[in-house]
Image (cartoon, rainbow, N blue to C red; front, side):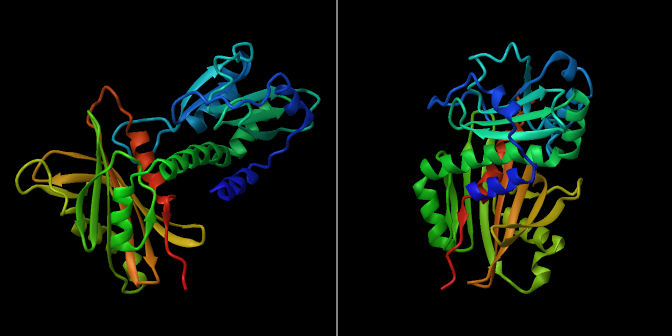
Length: 336
């Protein structure tokens, strides 16, 4: 996981110049616990930069809506402070992005530091000759900057899951599928069948759950969007709804998003969309990850969903992120 984050950081074309080091000259290393909630970001930026193109660029990156949620939620909860306001109350935050203007710099660049004043902490400093240069840099490296902070949050969650996981649910998954998986505490095993496991985490005003299923691999067509959607509906029907005869299905109002990607050399298919309940009125976002277990010649899917109807506390983002983090805690047995 650390190697993945290092590769991600390398994409940002980062250079730690003397000016960047001076920006933190008054700070010393500490073992204090980092402050702040997941997906909060402190942006240190002067008034001129924040109200101009630089601020617009930063907001367009970090407060852009998370796709495939029922409500509009930003990728990060951004709090801006001025350099003068960057005091001990905020220097220990988990995510910090600083802007530094120095006319003597030849071009804009970025520097990354970890665990600078607290742990776990990520500090990114954008430095350049002008606010305009910094704005241009943010625009050119938007995806990389976003991924750096998102990867940091993901790695923290995965490490926590591995250290304080639910051994009972993890053992059931390994017994059924031969796959190791870090499952956070709080999940309850709701179904355990030869080809299907369902676990759920019930909050006072929300529900977060995942189900894992497997079936024979029949060639590349098994990974098509149509085949994956059909399989999802077949297994999701085993999750009952609140009324008699009701069950989970995939919403047909919006077409699911489908993409393929590689994670540590393994090909995965991601589907992201919305689920409904046939025979009742419930729904929410879901995300599924599918791969081929070549050792057993089968399709393996991790499918997670969120139900959070409370409109006064729209925080589906963090629940969905929690589902996504589960993928990075999966380990397939090595081929003999």
